[in-house]
Length: 204
Length: 204
Image 1: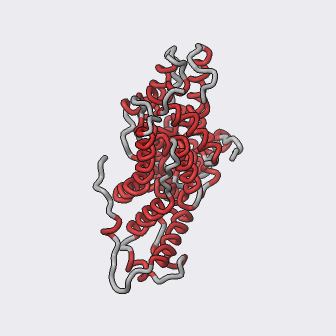
Image 2: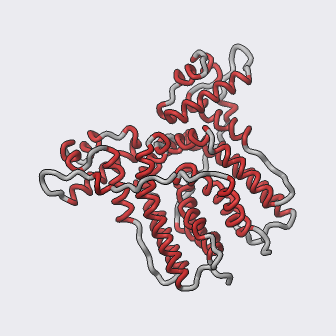
Image 3: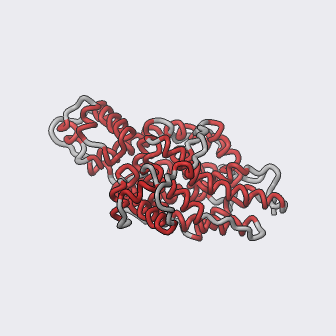
């Protein structure tokens, strides 16, 4: 299942005028809204241009294709919205990270991610890019949290660290995409207190 | 988020000739294949009819709409493929149920379920029916497993039972739909041994 790392930068086209970062953000926001409304397959560059009140040529100056636009949008949003908390305790870091991640998933990015997920089996390039950006960003933050907790002596030597990282993402995604139950603070705190801390923490 | 229970039976149309169960199964199999190929939105009764070498009227004699056909297909498959193991131990029951469920999800039903998930935000009736059939069937089996284990004294009094039921579904679905990592027996056994049993079992 290993895929070549996706380098969003190398796919971004640059020609003509220098890029305007706030304009790019407006275009990404429009792409996200269109994707949340109609899904990836039905998304067109025309619809994104109309939503952003921009010309289609403006979009194509920045992104080669809708795949590039969608993946760059997901990558930027993940980078901008995933915190790397360092509160000094495992419980504090997990709570802060997962509460913020849950709030982020409850917004338009969550709807867009859900629309993407339905397409992954048919779109291997999209699947590889989605995993290399969206999934790996949050996995890396969780691994960093566990590394710092290990240094502080908060993690059992035989803790199933990989499984805990996977479950944190799974628990939030399952509510968001399948059950539809609320991704709220009480739920996130239950995941931390009833599952993640008991599985990795030192016995109290 | 509570939805009215979905009664697949009441939506199934019966008129004219008596129903032929094996013919129905062939039509459901065709519906599943078409959904795995093109997704829910693009599925048409014509495509299902062509795949099953049946007339469209034959399909409409059995199901009122594509929503009815798809939901009845998911419900039937879940009923036919989800075992209710009773091995005499919590570990044995969890392993047997989740190995079988993982194998079931790794086949065409998993692809079809993934295609459905992308549509749930836009299709509230589909979402309610998906949850009332597919999700609740597996949740009920897991609850039964925990109930029997509780009677045998294998479950701690303060075990987070609801969370364990939710996580079992979440762990399998996350691999299937998001990470793409294999849903194989070693993974399922790690979920049981590293996560589910430690969270609910008596301390050893």
